Length: 545
Image (cartoon, rainbow, N blue to C red; front, side, top):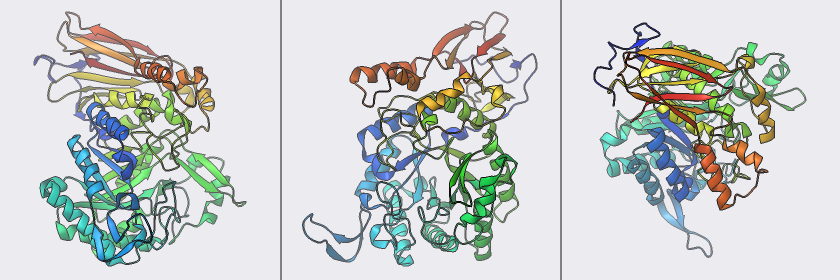
């Protein structure tokens, strides 16, 4: 621990007293996962425990709370042979949900509850997407949906206590603008589902926090202006020479707030998903992949904050309940060093713009398209299915060790102080200048990602930090192409589809072998930081203990 003499009144950055400001740890507020049933797996639970203990995640969000494989809503009882026996009235069984929520809470985190999807026996349309056949439709009977939500929330209050459940967030559905996949109804039908759900939650206790609309991405056209998606409105977008010159805007959010305001429906938070990618459909019907510039998330959040501030809900929290470099669970870029540099840059740039930006997702134990093929298949996770740390895991770990007070912000990193201990820490990165603010994009194969390895140049990081305790030791950790890059090591092995136990151990060692050295504060109390960061490198500085 630093001496009490190391305080904000003594610290000097590059010879000057810093003008401190808050640094919210928006990256650790919440993290995503695939679906509720996956949380019953032992490997999922081991990896989540590590994510909470090491990365400090406070909430977790996932799909499928009410899916058939959680057995919450029951209109019949099956014995395994012959037809199911109808029940006189619906039964609500929470044993599977209790196992998941008990584990989350005992791990030190809390659920960010996504209320969905529809149980088969309540769904108007079944098996709309995913390997596991999610039912993403309006209910056959809204009163029964409300009863399901009410019984579930009341059960949680009975089990965990009202004070605990008041600290949760209740999000209504997931990406209902994506018809007919995540929703088979209209925009207004989703708003009606939201109103019925929010009213039911608030009827239980007015202090419970509810929000939506949990829509997917920003768009530069009017495809979602009507009740359902109009793909003809995307033709000009697909043909655009420069998609970054278009006027990107959020989906449904202004309509959602206006609709709720007119009916006095409560909104405690606005949720949406920010992926810096999109698809548009040309006049020939072909899908065109769109990749936006590196500052897209920052600009989208800046606009979103203004829209909410000017609305009838200016105090609504902002929760980005899914975010990553792309929304594909088969994008090989997720496995790379390039993704680590990209998310570090964006998180530091956007730290003050939202209440949470939930990385999607913490693990490759994620079965929307079935299990991935091979150990590095482009899954969303910070760790792969085997628990091997990807570079993004280390990037989040470095961010998590920052203090809560910002001493210096640069385009390439930050210096911080912990308000409790006064410990100084830093994270810097090299998002190469010759990217010219181009995003890393996506890649269908690992080999295709390697084209970015030649970007440059290196970047020199030089700062003096005064007011430190003489003799104090600071640990420097660097993540770069040669250190902490398991997908590249896997590629060098010939990209084996199934790892041997020896290969697993080897890649785990590679993943955690960052470049490390120690700096000692001289008698002057001034630490001179002078480092050359290779392209895509991410580094942290923290006091040794």
